[in-house]
Length: 75
Image (cartoon, rainbow, N blue to C red):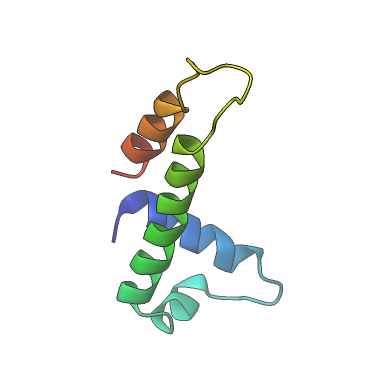
């Protein structure tokens, strides 16, 4: 699993009240599900960046910089 995704999963589990041992909870979520779920969220964020348009400015470019930053962060 990607280290950044693993860190986010662990943070999410720790944020749930009543979790004593996050490592035990992580075992119940298959790696393939965590990876795919995280990848879908990342891809949607990139898609939103790339779909940005300014109808008043025909030369406006989508947020390529932000999309690239998101990609690099989760590599």
